[in-house]
Length: 144
Image (cartoon, rainbow, N blue to C red; front, side):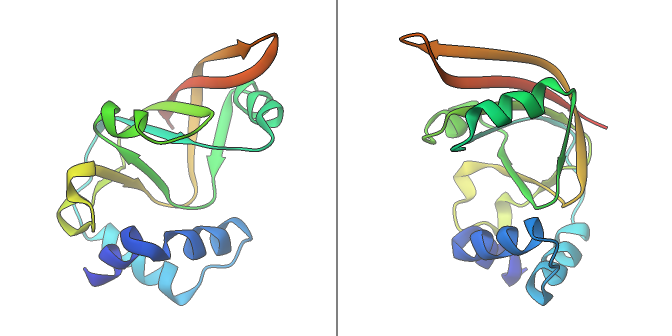
């Protein structure tokens, strides 16, 4: 399970960048295999992240479906997601997330990891403006 620890420590950026470009690296394949050996953990999890093109993200969310080509890291603790600096906040109802907390470099984050290729239906989108400009977006997703 060392590949999971390495993912949570520092390799997540490179792995997810490659997956987003359509490249399944040897490390990504090993991570998929390791995570798939764990029991799934259905339930609610939370994710906060930053995007430069917030208008594009709002358009994507309002389309009704979101496909993630890379791993999707979430936390079962809302408080963990709220500590992350970001302009996109997601609440995800999932059935195929994997509990990687026991193998994580930061186990108290209570991380649930979704494998690449997961699709989510968007239930609700809330846009927040700051001084008349788009400031952030929150959305509720359900795994398909």
